[in-house]
Amino acid sequence: MTNSLFLRLTGISNPSLAMHIPDGFLSLPIVLLTWAATVILVTLALNKVQKNYKEQTVALMGVCGAFIFATQMINFPIPGGTSGHLLGGTLAGVLLGPWAASLVMSVVFIVQAVLFQDGGISVLGANIFNMGLIGTFFGYYLYKTIRQLLGYNSWKGVSVGTAVAAWTSVVIASLVAAFQLGLSGTVPLTVAIAAMVSWHIFIGIGESIITVIAVSYIWRSRPDLIYDGPRKVISRG
Image (cartoon, helix red, strand yellow):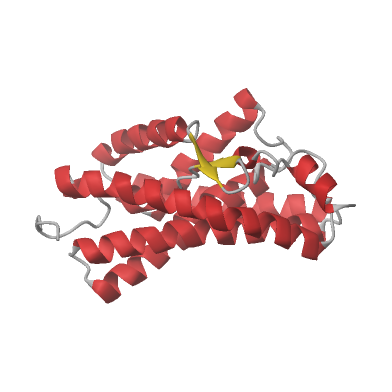
């Protein structure tokens, strides 16, 4: 399979669908493995949210989900005359924490698959895992680590952590998707990695910028809405 055919079939010629894997592109073992991982994590998230989160978090989850869904419809340009869009996993993680955020992202990608045919139904577990759960869990804990190193209650810690985590989560998600396609025999692994990661290096920059802008607005207006936010309102600078 040539590079051009791979780009066309996986939607990378239209990067807004670049990681929405279609039905039939993953082998049965990969499909079952990703479904199992997704179901386990979502089930744990449901239990965590029911036990530990307050009622106001549920309302914030709805608002966050609607915002992410809406912003995913807005494309930003990347080199080559193409475009990408926000995935939103790290943004949800920063605002809601990894457990509630994972539920929000799961719902967003279920709606996209069922109503808009963005990605296949049989591979929905893989798409949720790649685009949602990696961003919420990996993105959140990377953001938290950087925030602790640079100043937990400072804008510098929050902004740098958010920027790095948002970009990295997109690139890691594209790498995981490439491995799934390669191990499934859809395309050679080296071709999958080169095609997916090269585009998402640029898409991750857009993800990082949008995420920082959104978090910046909330930091200045309602820092209490940030999950595990600053202990007191600190002026930006």
